[in-house]
Image 1 (spheres, rainbow, N blue to C red):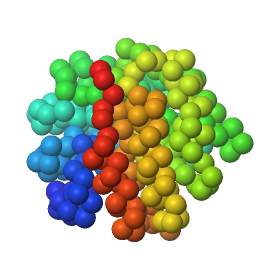
Image 2: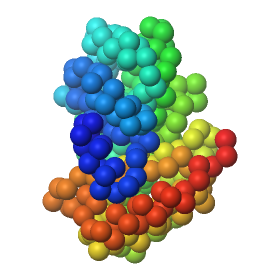
Image 3: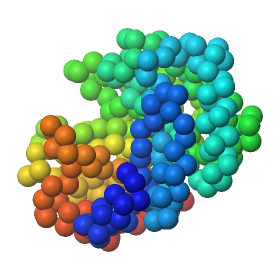
Length: 255
């Protein structure tokens, strides 16, 4: 989302986002311009680094340290807070780095290698967010414990889940995964991707998200505001009104 896109979103909804995401392909440089543009609105960039078309074992063994060093140095030069997530939704089976394609042990080794490299280069203003998909055992999405790299390598936990079924609630969609994560870590949790379709149910689900975030003491949520075949984008005045109302009353949990 560019500066102009953030401006338009804020104008349309009356809500200024605190986190704005972009998805970074492998070998893509750090988008300092993007980061600077969202920072103008007081937001923090969340970069989802996607290791597509590359073997994680090659990353873990150091074969891509040149690229990672360049990326890390650019983040360090940027000098402002950045949230980095690597290989999100690894407990799902739709990405090459995920379940049934790459072993959890290799994922863990790669995650630790990336974090260690950044820290070794003095990159300090990074929040490392380990992002999992919500558990759906009937869809073959297992609990994420096997991919856990350890508390010393993780600052936040991200969680992705969508209201595919209008009957789902925050508790049914996110509750089991929050419980599973809490067996691993007390790190702050951010709902890193969520949305609801069709548009008719969006107002109720947005209200449900705000209630759930408060009830479980989470950081917040990131709405996947994209108009694609599943129409996740905020597409009705009622949905926008629900977002505005929730944002006005939302209070961050005490630290």
